Image 1 (tube, helix red, strand yellow):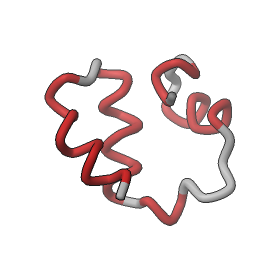
Image 2 (cartoon, rainbow, N blue to C red; image 1 turned 30 degrees about the vertical axis):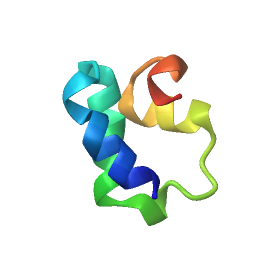
Image 3 (cartoon, rainbow, N blue to C red; image 1 turned 120 degrees about the horizontal axis):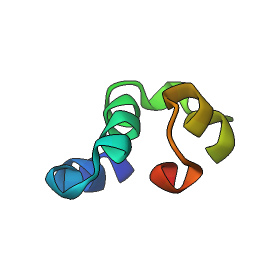
Image 4 (spheres, one colour; image 1 turned 45 degrees about the horizontal axis):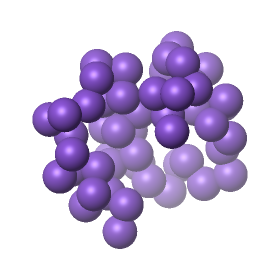
Length: 51
């Protein structure tokens, strides 16, 4: 699952990427249906941090 990949790579992520990664790990069901742009706005990060 994607959460296990995120956990494995977490220490190599930027602080912006970690904001998004933490949310995805803790509340994966809440990202369903959100666009990259919506997630970026939610965490005040660039869309590239979400991808």
